[in-house]
Length: 391
Image (cartoon, rainbow, N blue to C red; front, side, top):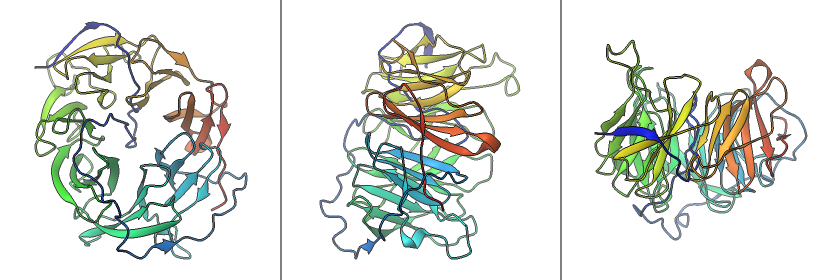
């Protein structure tokens, strides 16, 4: 049984915010599942990309689907069906989409599902699929030279699925979480894992929930999610993803005659095998708390967040960011101390935050007409809007 008790503070690192999109959650590496091949690209002929497109200070209408931070200088995003690379910490971006993923002349259909930067030189891009696509595989593009060249690999896809997401695994492995394709109210993912950059894959199992997997140990995995329009809940697997059970079930007045249980508002984050946290709702809809564990998830203690909080912007082992009435507040010590970030321009609201080094952040924001915008701060004092070349 899971117990959530009174208030206390632990050194807290942030976890990614819950939003309509599936955001990246950084986790502590707790063990080794697979070791990547030392020369995984040697057997395939590389595809050489054209020179980078010069960056001009224009701002096309953007739809940002993924932000992947390699380090404080190197940031990748998936937006408008293209893969964009920044080498200056998000201040400017260049289009580095491989030719095979670029829409044909006269088409604007997105062919890119996801991008994952494992380091400044090690990158993966996943080709998109449609529900009608009968193919049993999709393309995984891998680069080990900073996107100068890519090698295309065949990754298994889930028939009838609505897309897939890439995620860091343990020991350098990478997970592909494939939608099960069972309708709008189903959030199950069929998971495969590769430890050799897509040369081989291993079926892991099917998890309930739309969030990323958090690894407490090599065999104990957690995820936040929901099924069939129910409230969010926390699920745990003790056999490395082969089967899952509910640990904390959120509920609402509509779902049960019993007093509703506040659902989690972020995925769970583990700093190590015993310490972790997640952000949860309280009885007051504008008050969130950090539910902190020191015993590997057997019990949790609430550490109240001292701000009127709207939703989570980021949660990971390094930082936690909360949207507090169009302002952002962050903690890097699991709730012991909090600080504020500068406000965004008028009419622009936070959607997601990703840390860049010890003090920097990159912000995904919603501007006029719900247009996505990116802003970056290197010192936490002022925001600068990111620049993109014209599409």
